[in-house]
Length: 195
Image (cartoon, rainbow, N blue to C red; front, side, top):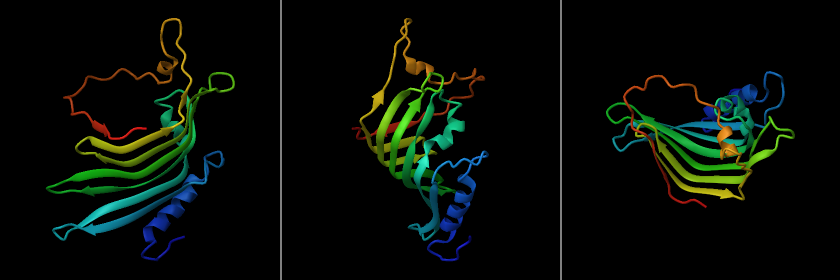
């Protein structure tokens, strides 16, 4: 359903489309009560030019919905819920920028479980993870996280006879890399407060 209200406009249209597209998998199983809001805002620069910005928020997004993508990286199954809000800001021209800001991210009941073992035991359990004030400058490859709070983490690690930690087997092996082109600068990540 398309809404014409200027305050709600595109955000409601996108929300309705996302609900329709994301509520069911191909097997018609409910993924989650999924709500994502996107609101396009424009603001004036100091030179009186319009600068685009997209505000976004996600509520109760099931992490397991990303499992097909995570399968390329991790062997354990991932579960939990995420609430988050932030914005994407960009500009082109003489002073290009592409920035992602996360004002708040709360992940609840995050678990990694091993489906290959009987009973799919939980390998990592994070009842609550909070990220506040995270910004990433994607062109400058720089990220700053103001605060990261992890409450009551639990990890089930084992060391085998050869001294290898079980966590080393959780990562999917990377295919051989092709010849590397000229090295690009790496990312700089700053964590200001961790609890």
